[in-house]
Length: 242
Image 1: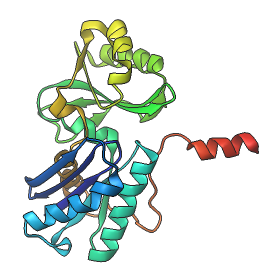
Image 2: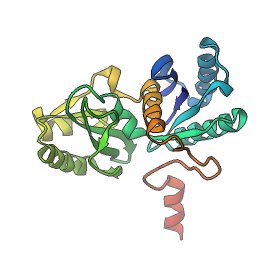
Image 3: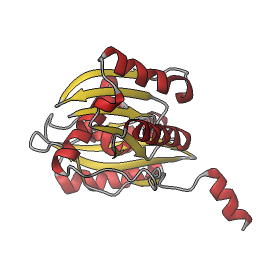
């Protein structure tokens, strides 16, 4: 099984190729570039270096949200175009679950994935990870909420799971780090930099596990839409004007 994984859901961009559980190639960009500049060249480079064609791929894995509205649209549109071009099915993966998968199978952990949603909000979800789980297991629904609401839920899930500490991942940590430290104290650990942000290699791995469990778990590319979790600015304005 050859998986092409593409991620543009956040300010980072990532591309990976994985075959039968082995990561053949991974690229990661988090520096002053737009996805429209970097994304397609990254995909071309991955296929070229690994001497693969798009038609060789068993599936394309893409993050479908939440995240940047523009980034999500770029990623899903690219996946759809590649799918039609190479007749390759598409697997949609949650950005928040992808973050948590960075820590899968390390130890029994309580994990919170956070993305910066701007406007004093974060996109977040809570998961458990353990050596006995191949993928992160959700404790909560995905949500958009205030940092204060996140803190209250974090305390609840730490108490509920019996975990001594909660590991935070994602670009939603840094903007509110002082608030989190003040409220959670030693209960909180921030993931190291190499595990903090979405990685395309983890995306490919998660997609493979998904397909091993359900070989037909593909998106319908005719109707698939990003998962935003909240209305766009344009939709908010339209609602206010109605």
